[in-house]
Length: 50
Image (cartoon, rainbow, N blue to C red; front, top):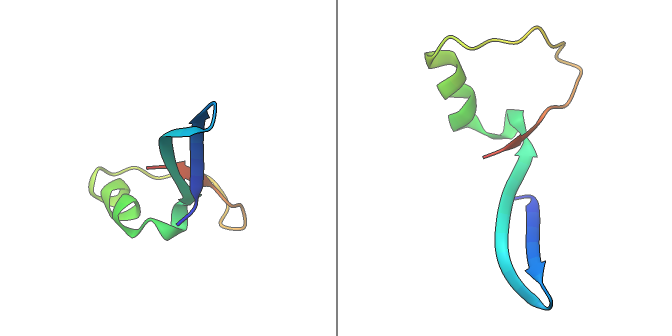
């Protein structure tokens, strides 16, 4: 799991889960179901916030 923590002073107040899009199997399947496709080449890494 990769992501970012949000701080206010020294307190953690939030978390944002991020990773390479290919690591989100659920997200990839959702894209297929709604007919979403990209013109990106497969050699590029794409980050997603999920």
